[in-house]
Image (cartoon, rainbow, N blue to C red; front, side, top):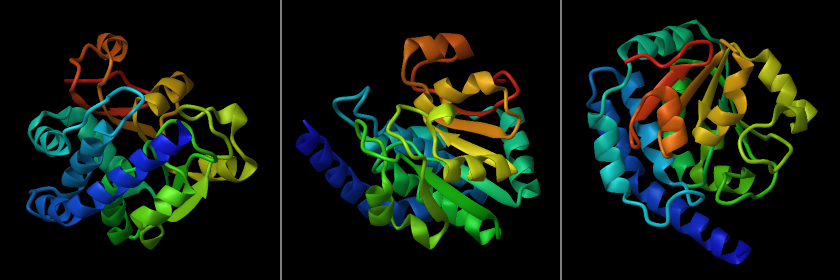
Length: 224
């Protein structure tokens, strides 16, 4: 099973890297480059073998650039980015990391101090330090692991180094449903969740549809 997952991760890391130039070009053509980066990052959230057996990345990218984002929540996110100096970026899956890189490069160009956190050990197809290395994340951010292999981000199980970065952050960008589900009850106003809705339970809780793309502040309910 582990060999199969590793092969899947290697495959999607390479597929995503092949799509990186096109993603950068698409984002560069958007009126708001930050919003384009957010949409690119969310497009990669479809790479989730805990939920999907087959993935159409091209379709996910097209949808991410066409589907609506909450205007109010995006404005709040944009303001939080402008006001932040230290940003902690919580990653989700291998392959998806390359899509995150597009947004991370934008944050780097805005001279933000960004720390990217991956899993401390393999779980399903979640991103690890090895995946971050393949994706070239160290070119635009400091990379650490969270010290555990739990699904999502379980703060009580995370390493002291991760918790230092968590406490020091002005803004926390949380990718994926699992991070949303494990952190949302914290009510931490520093957190913004970026993900694609992938299950009926989350869709119902947010009054959204499966497949919707979401940017949502941690201290607010999702707004249309």
